[in-house]
Amino acid sequence: MTKLGPNTVEYTVKSGSGHSSGGAGGPGQGCITVLRANGSGNSCGALGDGRPSRQPNAVVIQVATGQAGTAILDIVSD
Image (cartoon, rainbow, N blue to C red; front, side):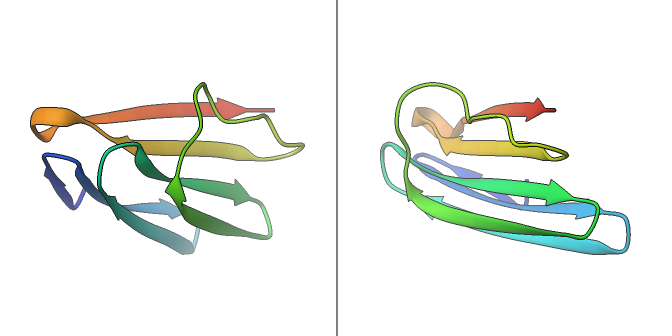
């Protein structure tokens, strides 16, 4: 985590020689980062309920904002 506050989260994930970063602010907001052998990508915005979906040959990381300066982290892999 590079920044964490009430309903605010920013982070950077390093994988091999690359990295991906994201950030979101507001209730129910967050980011999903997908790490693969040939690169990574992420998207940020409103998140639905539940854990992120598994993707073939990937690690999926979901970071969501929380109240009182907390964050919710989910990691799934294939």
